[in-house]
Amino acid sequence: MRNGEKIFPLESARDRLIQQLSGEINDHRVLEVMRRVPRELFVSASLQHLAYEDIPLPIGEGQTISQPFIVALMTQALELTKGEKVLELGTGSGYQTAILAELSRWVVSVERFPSLLEGAKRVLESLGYTNVNLHLAQETLGWPEEAPYQAILVTAGAPVVPQDLLNQLEIGGRLVIPVGSRFEQDLLQITKIEKGFTTHQLGPCRFVPLVGKRAWPLETND
Image (cartoon, rainbow, N blue to C red; front, top):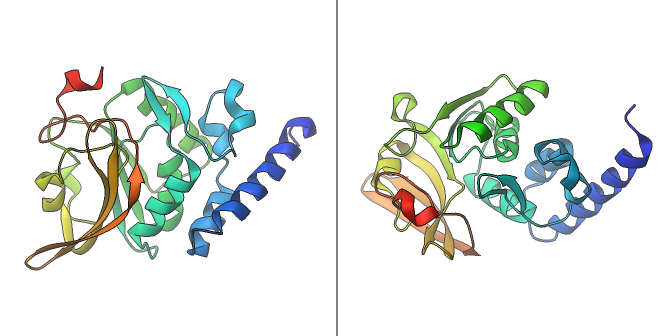
């Protein structure tokens, strides 16, 4: 057993967090997965005592691991049923990737920072996830080679809804994405239908900019 002085306070903090989230998140499957996945393993040792606070935490390269409420809200909005192939833009620490892997059949995740991709790969492999395929991001947003996807989750803010991602989404599929300025966005759930898409607003949020073709140019992320 790991050092009791560290693990027991984390377990107590995790229980408090899940109880807090349950007041706003009604998908019990999402809450149970977030209870199981050890968020502390996806941050540096110096920040592990904060792993179950409802706050974002830095992970290097100017990126963050998202606030748990936002992770839960975005995951719930994907409406996963265990059979989907999911595309994630922004692997980051790999924490959201792990949540998706628990709730879907297959996860394709792309990340533009090699150091974050390697770190996420190590943690995900150590936890035994075998239904995840990680890629270094290319010029085109997403990963068209494995499209179509039944769900797409974007963990960075876009100026508009990227057509490249809608093209990779199956009819009836859901895209959850922050859209707005480089500093503040609205979180949207977009469902692709035969003649376009429908949009549902989930509330204000703040993400780092989505960088790539038909998103923000690289220099705006400095």
